[in-house]
Image (cartoon, rainbow, N blue to C red; front, side, top):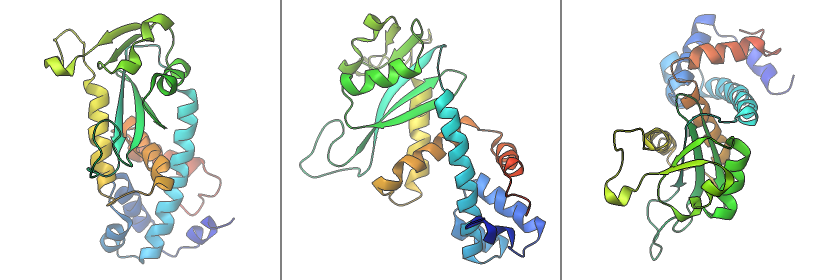
Length: 230
C-alpha cells in the first residue's frame, strides 16, 4: 500500500474527511486545514499529498489529450523573482518562461520552456493546435511564422492599446489564467524550480475544473482502488 495505507488507517470521522476535502478544494493550506478541522498537521499533510497525487495523474492524462481545433489564445509569461538587479526584459534573471495555450470556452495547456524563441514555441503549438485554427497572440516576434504553418493568425498589439477591438481580437482568456496562476503560486511564498512543474499542473487542473473541483476530486478518490477509507 505504501504511504497511502497510513491515510486509510487514519482514525478520523467521515465528517472531518469531508472538511479536509473542502479545504483542499478551496485551496486552503494544509496547516490552516489542520487548524480548521482540528486534526494533526501530519494528518492534513498526508491527505493533501494523496489528493495532489490524484490531481497530477488526472491532469497529466488531460494534457496528453489536449488538442485545440477551435479559437485559441497563445501567450507566454514568466514566473519567479519580481526583480533581479542588472537584468531587464523578457525572462530577466532566473525567471521561468512558460507558454500557454487556451482554447476559448475550453481548457488551458501550459509548458515551461527554456526561452520564448520561435524554435521553442513553434513545436509546442504545432503539437497541440490543429492547423487551420484561428490563433490569437500578441506582437511577439516568435509568433511571426504561424501563418506559414496554416494557422489563421490574428495579432493583438498591446503597444497600441489594442487589447480588444470588440471583434474578438484579444487574448484576455490566457491573460486571465496567468493572473490566476501568479496569485495562486504567490501563496506558497516561493516555489522551488524542481517543484514548479507540478504546482503549474495543479493550477491548470483547478482552472480547467472551475466550478466542479470538488465533484471531480471526489470522483478521482472514488475511482482510486486505495480509497476505501473514504
